[in-house]
Length: 269
View 1 (tube, rainbow, N blue to C red):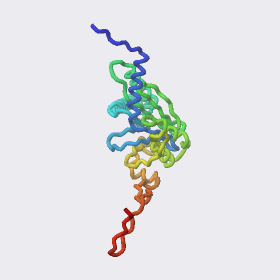
View 2 (cartoon, helix red, strand yellow; view 1 turned 180 degrees about the horizontal axis):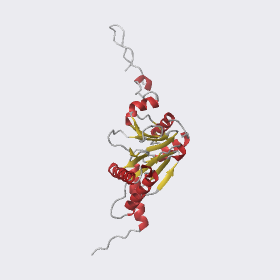
View 3 (spheres, helix red, strand yellow; view 1 turned 45 degrees about the vertical axis):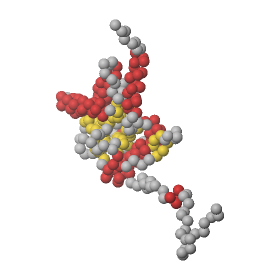
View 4 (cartoon, rainbow, N blue to C red; view 1 turned 90 degrees about the vertical axis):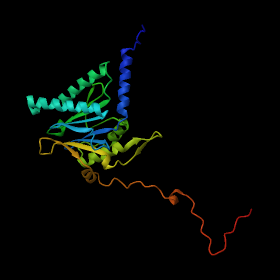
């Protein structure tokens, strides 16, 4: 009978953490930005059916990166929990902090369990209040850790590069137009192969944008911004990049054709 290999608990947790981080890093980033009237979510997502940002309850939104089937299960569980709590008690008893704690317990249990692989997801749970000071953004990692974010937050993909751009350009209390412009520019600010960074213009059709807007008269404050609205908000972001013509690349012009019936003079030899 062969003896099983021994793996220390520290090494086991490190391997599970590395596995989850690699899966999350392969996705595209999601940005959450607080602005004057609520919280803005922006992500590069070409799919029009598989959403990264969704509504949980009246004033609560959910955003995630990583494996779609895993964070979709978490989203559905959050919607059911919120509906049950609001129905059994009161709608005011459904809070973002309560949902964040429930998600933290679930993710922490899955991560520490040796019977299944850890979830390759990171989550935002955001809730807006009656004033900007009451807005809350919670970031939950794959192992159940909870962080209370302020101003802006980034997860997934090249989060360090995008976060550095936001750190330099974010303005507290900005309008929706300014916050959206900064968030989209941050997503387009990515690392280049030569070690630097490059800026690209993301088409509005490839953007998934949603807001928790406290100025809405409906009890539900969640709304999606469609490409037509994004075009109006973002305006002209610069001309499209076209391929250069041959003469612009410095190629020599063709020799002029000979005039008349005489053949061109051949070089000696």
